[in-house]
Length: 570
Image 1: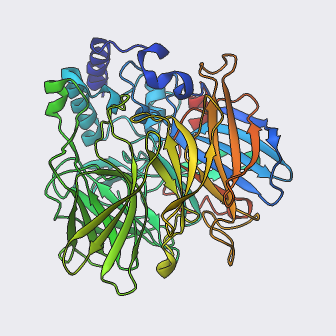
Image 2: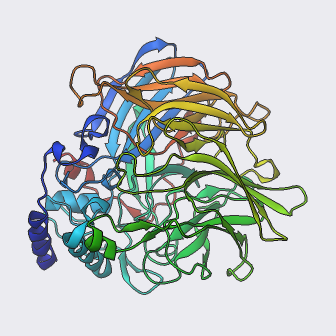
Image 3: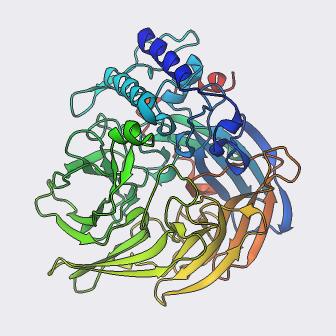
């Protein structure tokens, strides 16, 4: 390990890494990270009033590099360590807290004092190829992720496992940052990221988020290698959690993994009919099928050196392939593939089957061009798109439903779980991008899928940007992610964190808030100041009802390092 550390320090210096915020656009303004753990602080009502019928926590995870393992000059927005922002609501008051997800990777890097594992932003040019090689060597050897005591030595009795492909893996690690999404399943709140295993969280008093440990879902690495999808989907009827993991190495390049209602993996199905690797960020469920997206954004390591850019290339000449894997099948022999016009999907809305079973419909946000550098204007606007897959003919009917401003993405529906024959949602809530290729979002749009028309818009104030909306059912104690039984689909609230001011945190005018709207009328309900806390732009959130948090400690295979809190605040 010492030899790899030495090489990486030299490579780090050669790449001209800098700790200054000016080194990366993703470290300034609304991207600027929260500098430390943010202890509970009272929120203030700046406009409107708190809904009296809501009790629970609105939590959102996003990238937030720790001061001791970054930031660096090659920093990319996707690279930051997972950090959960949470506002606890109830009893006429609100409390904000912020805390890193204590992943094994983060703890190892904080102890080392530099980023030990290659990130997306460092994978540029010849130096990036070396960084990728060092990162792969660490993963293959299982180095650097074992929980350790204050002196850095591995703790005794750490459970070791082997991945399904025979490579060594560390059960405590779940290599990755857990910075992308939050889901609730098997009485656990899980922080997810595509680079590693999920981490179970607990929401304690005043909304404080605590990391309990990594989970392997009861069977090693839950598939080929210790990776997991950022966007699994729950079947509300069966209680199963189903995700599509993808791999950038050797075939098979994807697998469909099913987790039981109790939180244990029951099925891993390799998708051998994918001819090459592809980035797969999301999926969707119907009663009979799991949707597998084979898009034209692919790993191309030679591109790092040849073009001096990130090692992912968009292939406009290739179609978007949509696969339907039959749920319950032990293999992909009966899998049907459909070729749609070229495009890339980060996030789906939902999928459903026609009453006659002959057509499967998928609604998603689609891009005609994607560049992971996120440079302004490099990607095309996101378009809400419907794909009708005709099972008998193998054909696809594609319809573009809606776009505005710089495009739309981060779709949310009232219930993120699949709910049998009632899976087709009527409304989807979209975040509108301020400019094509940008990530700042300036409005929430309510779109009626039945009428195929906009049903309302919540525009942010000038120089204010929002994130993904979280749907919060009206009435406290309602299960996460869905309205009360018998209630209208849009009977609830939308909540999102916002940032405004144009300057860095602490500069006059810079301000973070939690804003709320009525999901039915899109009328503003309340704006909460967060006691001066800074909430940078982030990714995906979840609603955690007050009466549904007691069981979140269940099923953690490997507890977090007991020294985690001291290490992260050193």
